[in-house]
Length: 194
Image 1 (cartoon, rainbow, N blue to C red):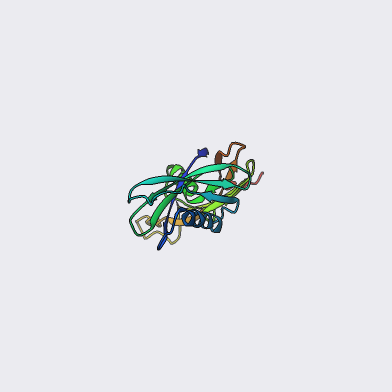
Image 2 (tube, rainbow, N blue to C red; image 1 turned 90 degrees about the vertical axis):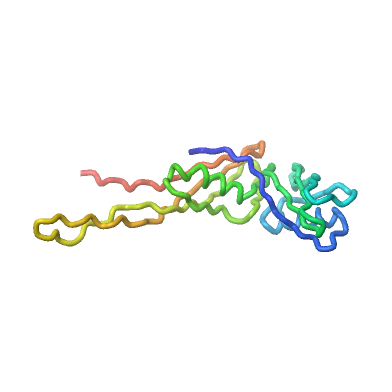
C-alpha cells in the first residue's frame, strides 16, 4: 500500500514571564531543531500585543533551503503557555503525525493496531530523499500439535501463539515536499524445489 501524507503536529510551550514574541520564535526554533528539524534556520513571529487565551496568530519558519512554512500559534492562558502546529513542509517531516497516519491506515490491513517507529519528532529530509520506519505488530499463529490423544477422545487443539511481526515502511519525499510511504512486507521463504 502506498499512501500520501500531509500532516500537522501540536507542541505546547510555556514561557514564564514571556517578554515578547521574539522569545517565543526562538523557543519554537530551538525545539524544532532539538527534535530533529535541523534545517530550520529561523522562526519569525509578528510583534504586537500579547494575545488573549484562545487567540491565534501565525509565525513563519524558514528552512536552510529557503522554503518557508506557517506555524499557527495559540495562547492557552495568561501565564505564557502556547501551543503551536508545525506543518509538513518541504524538507521537514512531522514524525508523530506520519507515524499516526501509517498506523491508522495499516490497522485494518494487518488486523491489529501496529506500532510504528520512525525516530524523533521532526526529520529534515531533502526533496527526493527518504528514510525507513519500523512497523511492529502481533499475529496469532497455530501452535504445533503436541501430546497424544486420550483414548476415544481427540486431543484439544493447542492455543494459538502470538508472534511479533516486524516490517519496514519506506518513506519518500518528492520535489514538492509531498510524502509517500509504502509497506514492505517480509519476504516469504522460498519453497524448496523437488
